[in-house]
Image (cartoon, rainbow over all chains, first blue to last red):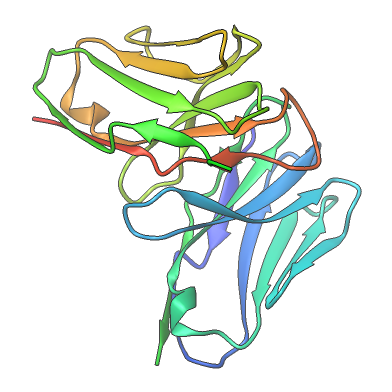
Length: 111
Length: 115
């Protein structure tokens, strides 16, 4: 059974800092991994999708890496802004028909 | 182009009642999945439907059921509601079952409160 863990559970940083969010998974036989952002009480917004054959994906200030063999992914946020404050979720697709989510990292960026 | 739409946005029900939640996928998407997110946790998979057939089911009791219609919209039904069913219910659509280059797109969710 796939298990996904995100560390840290919560993070508070001053504006402008570069930061790294971590995601680990137990079963490396994945199809892809997707990072989402969730604002309080809202739905999920897709940030980046990394296929199993890829090592990283970039979108603006966001960069996600994938090391399938070690069961790890990281989301790098450059020059953080208060508007980046949200919960970040990683989700692994390894059965083709479902996502397994981590518990999320709650990020607070202080002005 | 409209994203994934869910209705209603909020709902309050009494224990033992029944509830129906609705989801319309992105135009052209044929797969709809349902997830339950309890406060403070990551979403948990409930069902996936593709081409009107159930293609996956998570570890949820038989009180939970779903269906997909010919226009690819979907309903999630929960019978005999328990306090523990209080959660944000998320619908996700994808172009097809399985793996593609686009991943899953989620709706804004339905907040269900059982009292």
